[in-house]
Image (tube, rainbow, N blue to C red; front, side, top):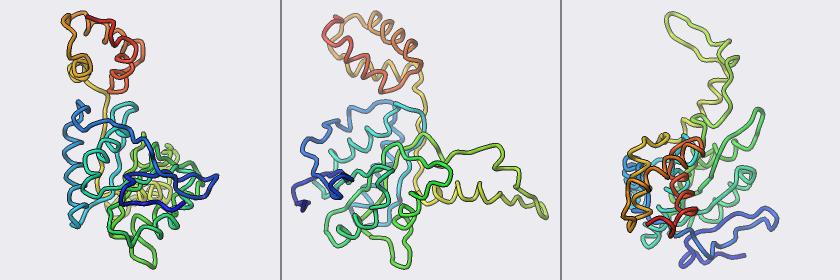
Length: 254
């Protein structure tokens, strides 16, 4: 169906209908709801503001530990800048083969588009990264000026890395020459000019996120004790863990 981008802030590619579906209820997460990732927020906001202003801006790769706010940051970005003309199109990794067609339909529009790929990674021999490469850097045709790709991943290089990949690495005249497998892995992630790293929360950052979710709780000591026990059972401290704790105990802790 035809998307009215003047009023629709986001859309999702649906393979069964071979088209975009407007997002009727965007995630309402706000910029100020995200805690513990201030540096990442600042850098992504700066890049996005340059993009919206028509200045040179990079594609962005948000990589690192699970549950640390990578996806939430992109969703909050839409809510923060949608009134300034930012639009987001979410495309699953399996649907990247359709990316050139998606981009063809929007390259002449006045809005600025983020192609959002969540949890992006590629297996051995996976050809899906090739259409992505053409959008990141162009082919015989220049890449569209009004489109940038923001991807999240647990892998820095988006592809599996094996010890055996390094066996064919050589040294000539003091210079290291990576094997072709390593070069292939790095070449894709290198096309993202902005890398943002996400790590498990330190204890004080995790508790800061918990405090923000429970602003009216009086007994902070009991709240923190329960929150830390919950994180220990979950196997890690993150913004996602804090949210899950909130959903379980909201309205019950005084």
